[in-house]
Image 1 (cartoon, rainbow, N blue to C red):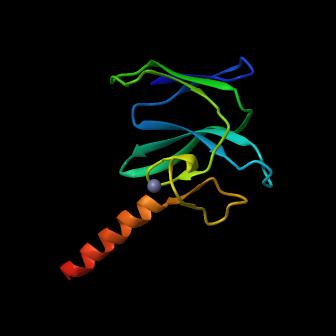
Image 2: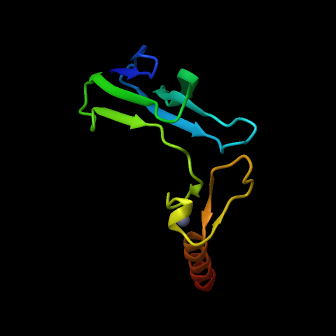
Length: 141
Ligand SMILES: [Zn+2]
């Protein structure tokens, strides 16, 4: 499998991965005015071989600014990968629920353990759903 990552500076990263490797593209975002105040693009993978897995890092900590566009395109693969192309614009980060992915503006209450450094927390709806689930499981025992 081969995939291309087109970066905002017009450069392109070409990654050759064997069939027993998988990849993921991840943007780490940090709140404004925090110690970091930026976003980092990471492209990582996993290799399964002889029943062991190995961590791969093809791109580490590429800095993104708001408005930057990153394109990931699979150009050659044995299996169908859908979608074969993903275009992602990096938008202003907003605190969100790590369980249901709703943004802070979409929920009544969002609890973030460390608001200065974290964007991900849990919303009141998910806390309530978890509380119901915990009670249901306890009553079964
Ligand atoms: Zn939630």
